[in-house]
Length: 105
Image (cartoon, rainbow, N blue to C red):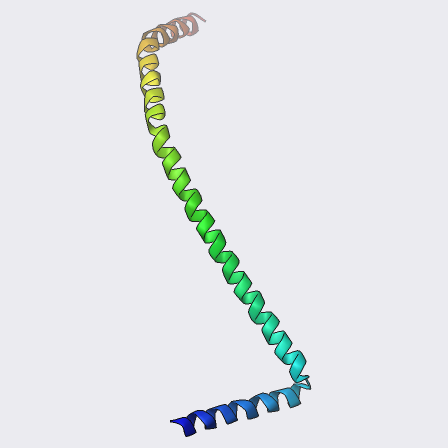
């Protein structure tokens, strides 16, 4: 088991060395770029998680506000229905008069 791990580690090191020689990169610069890239990716994931948490909190707030506004919306709808019920006879009368006027013309 340990021999296999050492072989794998040796092969990985040889592969890395070959890569650095072929690409003519400095090992320190390569390590710094890997570190910087990894750090950027970790920060990006952290930002995504923060934004996800904010979105979840905002959705929760929105749901609370919607549930609070339901009685008001229902009351407004009742008022509108009542107003329409009261005004319908008058609207019908206006429409009849318009029809009568258009027939005369």
